[in-house]
Length: 120
Image (cartoon, rainbow, N blue to C red; front, side):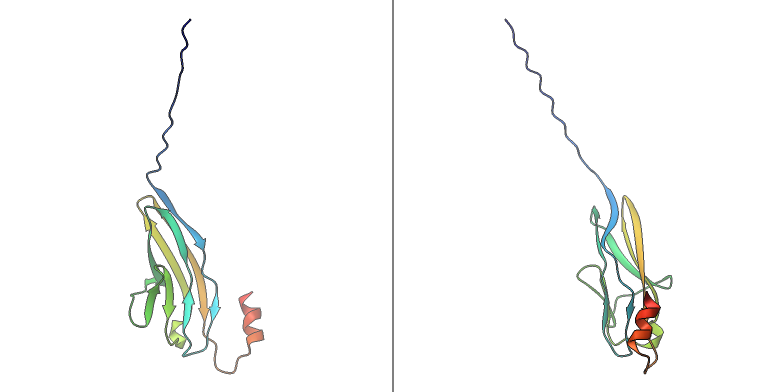
């Protein structure tokens, strides 16, 4: 009597996975001179590169605009002209993804209640 044993091996190899967001930035409000940070956590394979844009223009990292934690955008000493829409753009060889949030810089004297209502 002969016994035949068949075995099969299955190897799954994922070469590339497009970026996806684990954490999206939230809309923020800040008075002038405050420091703020937009959080943006991304994953993918290979690890995506992350760039930030403001109203469609690339944000150049500097002492003022800092990339921290690999992908968060920190703005030190907010001024009125920082107000706008910020986009977190993640790219790798498999694709790209983007998410956005708004920064509002109110005039001095505005109450938080009005701002919170506006952001909802």
